[in-house]
Image 1 (cartoon, rainbow, N blue to C red):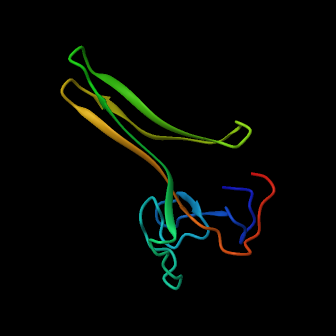
Image 2: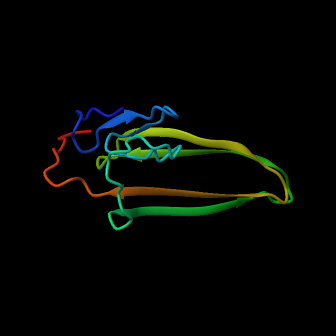
Length: 119
């Protein structure tokens, strides 16, 4: 979990459904899509944006199968690693492929939200 205090931009909590670390401000868990607060106003599509999206496909050649590990690493502005997560592992055999998409979904912080000085 982050070092942000409750109510600050970037503060986190644990999803009660899937136990993933999520933003405290989330009304719906981005991992399991479970609803967390029914009294919270829904974030409409106009408030959401995707500042980063990367897609790619891997194919096994006829030379043989291989195994893969998908790792997501987050670094701060100084290049220091602040998060690392193994997202998926598996194998790909000749004639098979896997398509990967990594995206960052964001919403604007509430006006007047407290700003943390460090991560």
